[in-house]
Image (cartoon, rainbow, N blue to C red; front, side):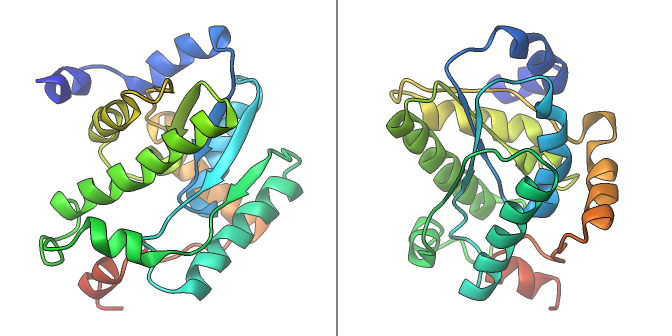
Amino acid sequence: MGETLTKKVNLQRELEKMLPDIRGGILLHCCCAACSTSCLEYLKDKARDVSLYYFNPNIDTEREYELRASELGRFDREAGYDYPLYIEKYEPQKFYDAVCGLENTGEGGERCKKCFALRLGATANKAAELGKKYVMTTLSVSPHKDAALLYEIGKEVCEGTGVTFLPSDFKKGGGFVRGGELCKAYGIYRQSYCGCVFSKRERGL
């Protein structure tokens, strides 16, 4: 029911209304540099005390993990944001444990929900550790990701942490297209798959 109600709401508009009054710091989960570009641009003049968090154990190889993390840091610096960036070590077993038994469910199904919960839950815990009051994710900028679903999962994993998950749908207002423009302008690496070995396999890569 909550998901159905959320889908009727423009989550990006809700975020826009909330940002001027937010105090206490935001930890933004960043899935990759490409998806983060337009999100960081959007938040620059709208949000205070933003930090970035890179925790994506779903990524299939350590090389790919490090490449995406490196590109995120480069864009943060070169675009002049210089947000604090926290990068977790590569621990793919956490992802495989979380999705055990769901390997063949297909992209966008139950496997992805477990993956979202893993990453957003870790973000909430990191925010609590850092003393941040709010978390959000760049995942919603993708046209392949359901912002309402991400919001529902985010709220669930934040329960009991003292941290609030903010609504967002960064694809609204041309966010995904703008991200592509920024990737081109800064020469940002854009991967052709979500990250996990299962999505890579489904795309025939």
